[in-house]
Image (tube, rainbow, N blue to C red):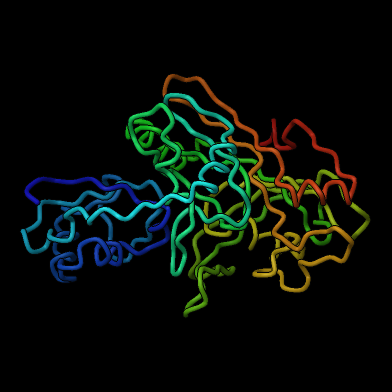
Length: 329
């Protein structure tokens, strides 16, 4: 590698330490050599000098200086994967398209479908992107992610140029997100802000987060109760101000009202009895509003998935068109 290279941090590498990112992408680069590159400012993140322990965020730009042939060997393209597309699932995903233009492709991701692969996980959106080219010339690119069990608005970039401004929009918080959820119990007060730092739990527990004010990264979520069913449950609108892993789920559990069906964080307290009431996670990415480089905005709304629509009927909830956060700081 004889020239400076800039690499964007993917959703998969978010929250990873910088030295571990290099270990993953450039395994032949020694830690001592990396430390020297950092000390001399040759490795930078978003143009700034950083330490090896720096935690990365999705969309950040990492400056990788010219490396020796042996050190850069791992940057060679990996052999193409065997992309056998599940045609039935691909067709369902094409039917789930909410918006398509020359830059954007927005789908209503089904609950239970992962965005990216992981251990023993071969069925995910990333593996189906070849089926979503439509009239384009490039394979769509993931620019953000949703939890596997979260449904709703998922934005894909149709070109490399669109991927750059979309990644920047998510990084600079220029993408306004609105989520709908049902909580077990009713948050008090009815409207508020949760400001609790989060960190990954140690050990082999899978991807799980916990409140950690000492070692965690600051995480902020706004919530507003739209309707309540006594003290049993509530229809809650959520707005993530920051974008930490499982942020909304951990925050709602932390204030004593876990999201319905979220056994991972709420345990038995996240389950309610009722005929026809699903035990699936009740968290839905309802709407996203993006500001394009030309100054125009686009807003896309996703209808509720079947299990949540059924719960809306069960509780008698309405479906308001406006966000309860409009006009608020």
